[in-house]
Length: 145
Image 1 (tube, rainbow, N blue to C red):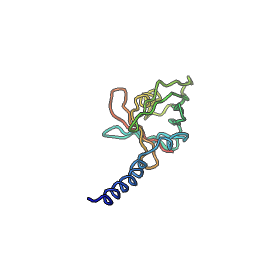
Image 2 (image 1 turned 90 degrees about the horizontal axis):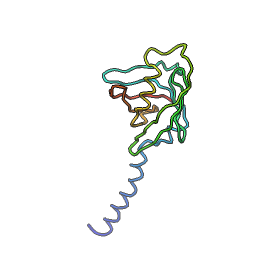
Image 3 (image 1 turned 60 degrees about the horizontal axis):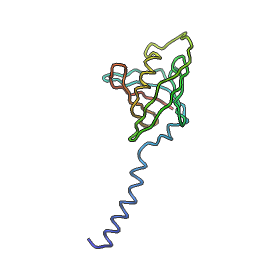
Image 4 (image 1 turned 120 degrees about the vertical axis):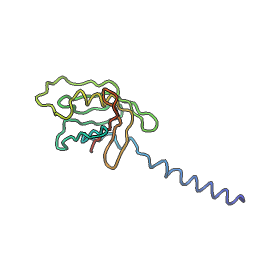
């Protein structure tokens, strides 16, 4: 390969690198947006949450996640890691009595899923959090904007 061909190959590689890196989802697209839980995927089935209900929500700011956990409001610090890793720390919550609690998911279970979250992803327009339940069964929490 002559010197000119080597330089051209190097320039092509350098030009393609930003395109490859920019295809990964950015957490800035998750932050400062309101998200509503619409589904929990637990193999081999899914729990569908009524989309018209705001029982389970979340919002990430720069340092904390907060939202509603049917019926209580909650907040917790979180840490981001490489390869879309995320850790949500211990959740603090208000202490309101529940007049109504959805049958498909209890507040306690929702908080366990959040505190067991290990990865985040954007799939289409939805935010997905990979987690586990209290028994270690893998689950994906799907949030719509």
